[in-house]
Amino acid sequence: MDFFEQISTMGTNKNMNYEDLVNVISEIVLLHSKNFHHPFLADLKSGFTYECDTIQHLLMAQIQMSEGWFLASLLQLHQAHSKLTSFGSAAQARETTKRGMFGSTSKTCPPGPPSIPGC
Image (cartoon, rainbow, N blue to C red; front, top):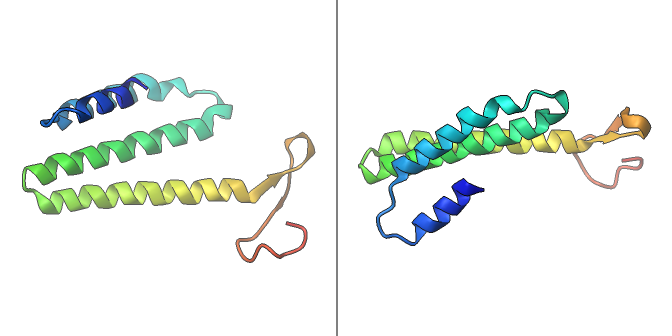
């Protein structure tokens, strides 16, 4: 939360220092990436990792764009897009698996028309 508050505060300034934001998000990753050691927190850890990686790539793209490194910036944007796409497909795969009683997997609905009976 502090990171997003810092982004909000820095947004009011005309000259934002994106390098500071990259350093802050890197520190957050170093401090908290090892805190998700329980198996029940695996989904939370993957979401945290995807979000932090995406923010880092977007901030690096902004830095490189402002320095005139357009190809490097484009590659950072592509990496951020890839992270978002893979996170979206992983989240969708988790949602298609329905849980039965006592946590057992009862069935998986195939992606397709929602009019399939039983899904």
